[in-house]
Length: 357
Image (cartoon, rainbow, N blue to C red):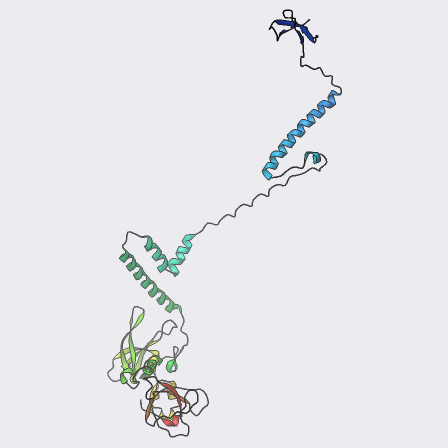
């Protein structure tokens, strides 16, 4: 028989107890002890089914723990435990994978720099010079100014060489396509000088009736002097003829054989100031000075059609003709007394005007 040794809780004596007994008697102090071995013998019926259910429950617990961990990442809350068995198999939503960022194409700044140096040369040069701190400010500015001047000169030279000659109407009925070489004609004022004369204090001042002369220097035409209005010349050469490069004539004076370059708009092949019998056509070639005397029945009128009282012997500046069919075909600038040096446009009948210059 197997005995179990225990200690008496009252006196501390050693007790030897038979495991089959539920009581023990202390021989020293007489205490009676109730013994609970905390051991239960369980008879299990249908052990195979119980083991199957136990294993099934264990696997289910593992599956739930796995789903719980995945739902915590996708913020998904599973259905309540009571409805879990009845609910259909649930597939928690999956996050849509983010689209990969588009691959950025490699930039080619060298191409932009190349185009910049070709077409807008001063801009990239200025950027380079601004970062070049070793050079002084004066040196950087001087380099940029010189480079810009060279660039503009080369650009104009190339542009003028590729632009074809095209017709272009100018004052005095000139055209870039007309060839004047070897022709005799006259140096005359153009519309630009005519504008200066109209806005001067004395339009009869002969020093204002001059045409500028030019000299060709480094892709540019520079004014060098002037020739009197109506100077007789012979055209020896003709230059230019592009839209970007106006045409210039090399003329030779008939009196002293000196040569000058003049703009094509300062040349006339006809002496229109001698056309008294064709005075209706003369002003379309250039400005003239004329004397007014009323001989026709058509008195001069202003732009509003109101008749004006202009004294006979008044000197006026003829500037053009109207294309309308009217008895007052010529229009001129009239400076009335007390006008403060400002002219008034007046329409005249041709019979009332006499060319004096």
